[in-house]
Amino acid sequence: MHADAISALVDAWRRSQDGFWGELLVFVSLASRSVGMALVAGIPVGMVLSRTPRVAGVVIAPLALVQTVPSLALLGLAIPWLGIGQPAAIFAAVLYSLFPIVLNTYVGITGVAPAVRDAARGMGMTDRQILWSVELPLALPVMLA
Image (cartoon, rainbow, N blue to C red; front, side, top):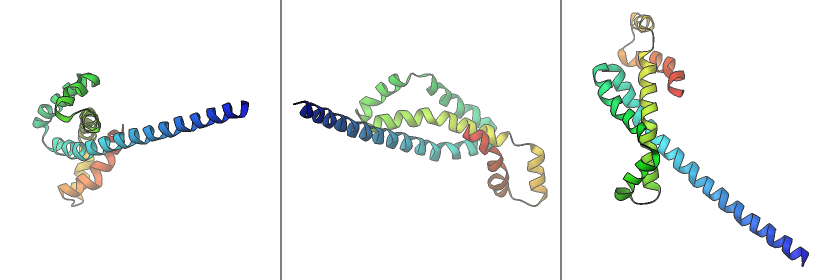
């Protein structure tokens, strides 16, 4: 009887572990998809805003407002349109991820010293080359923050 109890405990533990690992996989999948979508949308927006500073405040301010909304409230607002489940969770996570990605990209690119840009331009680089070969590599530490 003692062996049967231990066997039952081991079986219950294994089932709980399968559930844990399955749920962990779902969480990692949701988080990676939402952050991936936010990166795909946020980095180009930050790059464009770095070229148009007048528009930057108009775009960054509403994104900052989204950060003030509690996550549970945002999820509650998304559920009537997206239903309960993964789409609503991904939508909320993307919205929360956008602000830091856009802001860090904008700040990183605009924080590159003008002398560095002038040196690149003096070497004959085009604006696109300066962005991809000079500004983005120098802005990367700020963007990853």
